[in-house]
Image 1 (cartoon, rainbow, N blue to C red):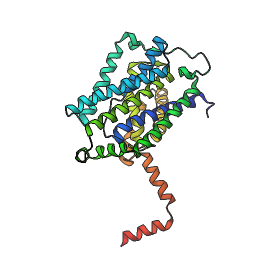
Image 2 (tube, one colour):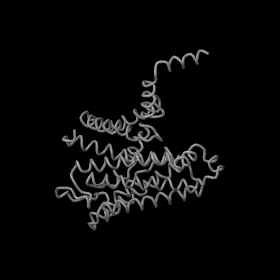
Image 3 (cartoon, one colour):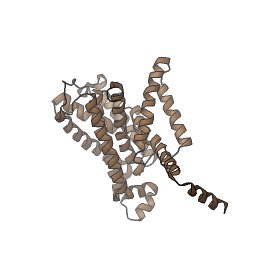
Image 4 (cartoon, helix red, strand yellow):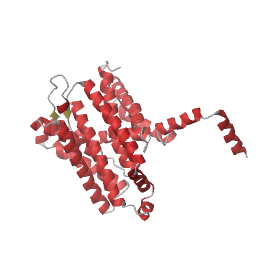
Length: 315
């Protein structure tokens, strides 16, 4: 399978969006804070890596760290201003869209970072350079695989930690959590800044994989939708939901995009995304992964369990 360049490229994107989906899942699925402008943080990570490497020859490792700090700081600033003035819920989500759009317009006119013409990475010279995070398509596949694994392990660790319990309590009922002594203001800033920083890390690697950065694609609304589609389809707030959702949605998106081009139907992939989202919300409101877990438990349950349940219902 890894001998096929197309499969390698597709799976790399699936794994990267699994990681990006985990960052969004952390903010909403665990922390309860809705962002529809996550492309802002992805773009900050991408431009941090791109500018430092292309303009100054600085290692992408430094760019990744810089992007994470920058995006985390921006996320914390947005969160502080929002919650300081009681902007929450859908209004906070609209604010994230506005922030992402503002950044997209700003970077579109900023000649230093390439503006609308884009920022291009030099072609790899051959071989693998770990220190510069450069290599062939297979190398980036394993980088994306490591990121996805790190995202899954990190999500599971946080979910089982004290922070995970606090954030879920805050998500389910903020007033009750505050009454129990949880400092919800500080915790909301923390979860948003952590989510933003991880999204920036994924954005930096995504820029290296693509070899170029354009503001409309890396900071546009389309990318924000691509980030959230995995957790929503796979299962919001679950550990494996972003992976399952990305495995289902991204290959379908590529297939529908190619089919739309051949049939001359513009936007067929976006139409398909809409149909998939509506179908999941209607038939599997918890997502695909929780449905798989329920089905697995039902299959593994002994036949006597079904008989016992039916007798309880009759009684």
